[in-house]
Image (cartoon, rainbow over the protein chains, first blue to last red):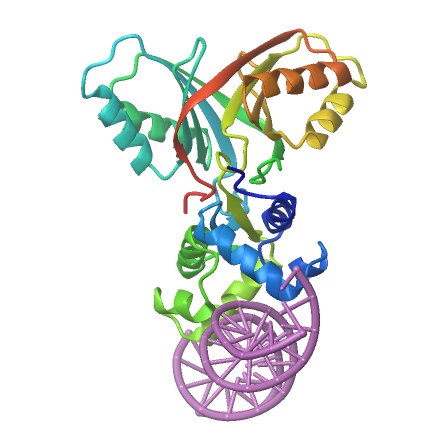
Length: 152
Length: 152
DNA sequence: CGTGAAACAGACCGACC
DNA sequence: GGTCGGTCTGTTTCACG
């Protein structure tokens, strides 16, 4: 039932931190032989435990330095409303995260935009595609921590 | 003063999607010569616009399939409170995002844990290190969208 | 799991137009 | 920006203990 042992976890921990490391460099940090390490990495990729490798871009310098959390409450649901909502947020590249949540809120969104004006445009585009009644936004003043690394 | 042109943006867009592509493969998609593409990629890395490359791990299969948003209001601040808070959340690997925000809330946290029990343990560890009065949590029932790709 | 070896692809970098 | 061509590093597979 166990999909992964501690060695695999260690490999992932290393690659979550730096995905440019060569197989050899990863192997040295465990320690493990180059070949054994390669076989494990291959397996982790094939099983999909390792979903991929991506480049991280500095949002500030890419011109979208303002992060916004959008909180949505929605009492009434048309049958098609959810489908429209999903389609809308999925298509908007500024929306980087969408979560259906428990508790008071129904949905939490995270978006990245250039500035407050750009957020307003995004908001207009969103409510154009799908009706939203109870929406509130919190602008991120400071990003204290942000990591793609899953705890292992 | 411009840090980036459209070609750079296109390169980043490609590598945000798939960081395993060879220089040649990236170059073909623009189009651009292999060497020119390599020079740009190198520059983007050196300037820090490309912050790095990382492996993405399937959180579910890594045993932390529950995401939680934690909302914190804090009226009174000791002088050292903020420092303690930063230190605490930075050190906890389950906390994957921490944001100081405008509006009603003061801080938004995102954490990844195995289950609700694990969240409670995380919460206990957090308030042990730093006093928190007004805290509420929203568990993520469904991750509708989640991307590391910044809009370009 | 480990070693070694061999074949290949790709990164890297200078020189040049 | 593009082309050429070289070196070197790393990947990917073998076979074998």
